Length: 257
Length: 352
Image 1: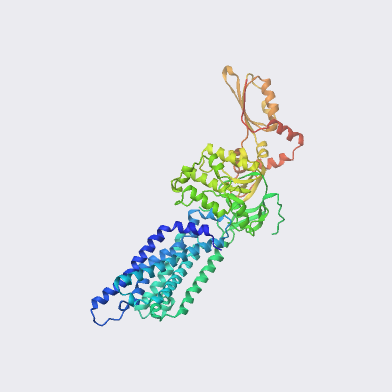
Image 2: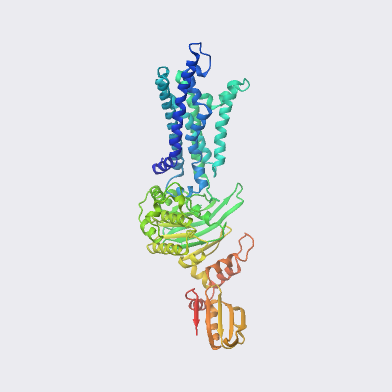
């Protein structure tokens, strides 16, 4: 189901993006425990005001769903898959890939796996940066180490589901821009619904529609998150993957212009 | 549609039809019937949009037939697409590569994906003048011709049973085109089959056994190259000492022009049917033939005759094509005479 030769080439083709992106995620994520420590120090014993920055888990959570994190995780997960099939098609390299004895579903599965590898590495980099930051800031004692595997798994599942949506879009178009537009629009729409719902009463009832609403790093670290919410991402992944596996083998691939 | 497959055929299509668009308004292929034997070097000609690439892409499983069926090496193009691609080498038109790789990395990658060992890489590299030093350079630095050579290597290096090449000479200089042609002839001599589309009619004429001409998604001719060329007219130019009388009365001669050339005599130019040439030359000799040029009909002329008379995309049999059909029904004596008269379609110059 997976073609190792193809996977190796895909990862190699994205190696610079992966290396730089992962390094930036580590640096970015280690900032948040440091920010938390600076915030607590500034309070200088005064009562902690309510808000995300009042706890280490809340601060880490802000970092995880910050727009910069979304851009970084997006590049390292959905960004790898969105241009996979449509990009090869647009460049004209899909021709020769398809001329090899590889079933089209294997091509989809291999490209999807690369997206999930990116999501996995990005989540691991975030957790690693958080641990390093907590050690640097001297707040490691406040970090729920036993919950870090769950945070890693949830982050991987969350961004892996977007990578799967991206490949479903990629498998449906001959060019990357439409696939990219759909993927970015989906991520943006989910994020906007979540943000609007958090400070606008009118939008609050619709906040549950956002995937970001079902991904709570703070809840995972504080053990208040509902594990069943992971099923939403599992279902979304299954649906998007089913579409890609259905659509791509049935597509007519006419000669590129 | 169920089809009985002949295992001696490398490619077989039966009423192969491909329509594009939601309501099938674009008719890319219309009921195409082709049979290509194993060991043939088969040329596939047609202008842009004629259906050449659609046929090739359907054979390789990139496109799904609207109706009809096709088999490659006895395998169904829909059900056995993966197995077909295991045994076929393919070079697409407008060949694209992964720019971040070197030539060698690219070839190694494509060979690994094919799951077959490289048997001919050095032989092809030698023929196409590709050195190790060139292969070490990134593909993005290659010229178009160099990229095309890489494309040829990836298609041929595993010595596949069938080579499907879409415009293989694209971007190659004439010397390399000739080398490629020799490579193809070499593979065919060893029992491999080559199916290739080309705009270079001279190339098809030089190396192919048979040729199919498609237009508007339909097959308009499927002949041996020799047959196609045989029944085309020849251009004759001659210098004779004395003016010939009643020359226009000769059957099979047209477009006759006679010009006085001072003391040299008379220059005669005309078009002639192959069967009329021996008698015409005899008459020229009787008038004191001094110089003679018989320009053999090229496949290009044959090709143009299929296309030249139509301004619309609708498929109509050109008069020449109809004549070709009729001429095949001529008496054996006439056919033999025509064959004798023009045994080899090459330029001949006779000086006296």
